Amino acid sequence: MALREILHYPEPLLKQKSEPVTEFNDELKQLAADMVETMYAAPGVGLAAPQVGVLQRLIILDCSAGDEPDDLLIAVNPEIIAGEGDSFEEEGCLSVPEYWASVKRHSMATMRYQDTDGNIHEREAEGLLAIGMQHEIDHLEGVLFVDRLSPLKRSMFRKKYLKMLKEKEAENAGS
Ligand code: ZN
Image (cartoon, rainbow, N blue to C red; front, side):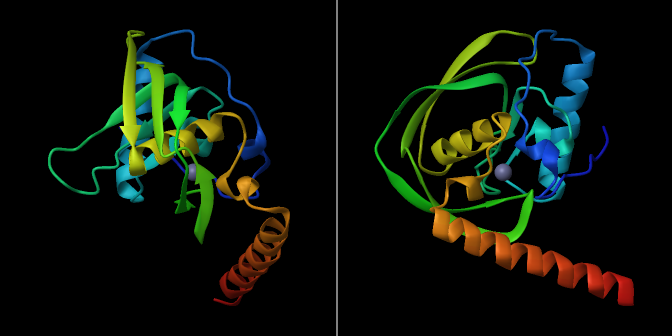
């Protein structure tokens, strides 16, 4: 296993759509294992393959928040097949460090996905896991949670965030 580098906004690759996984081989299992290690090390509760630079439809989630047992979900070619209820919870993203904002989502969701051997499963969830599923699947469409903010909030985010990045660059250059 190996840690992979997590890409950060405004990396253009994060805006691209991912391809369906068609081969359930060792390479896929290796990618999933690396992503699991990378997510726990970050630490985060979810990670999508494009966040580590791979444009394939693979996401992982563990919303157990350190409770035992872990609730690790490795989902290949995931799709939301049912969603209902409204939630407006604060979200963050490993690709948008140090920024959190409330996003409108379904409060309950059912996801259909394949495991790394290609078997089909369904998982019904509510709360944090339901939100995580929607957030991670968005990544496969090239959509970040900040893209779901109102136009005004989004432009405020861009200004604030790009300014923060510049300040960090200046800090690094000065050190
Ligand atoms: Zn994210």
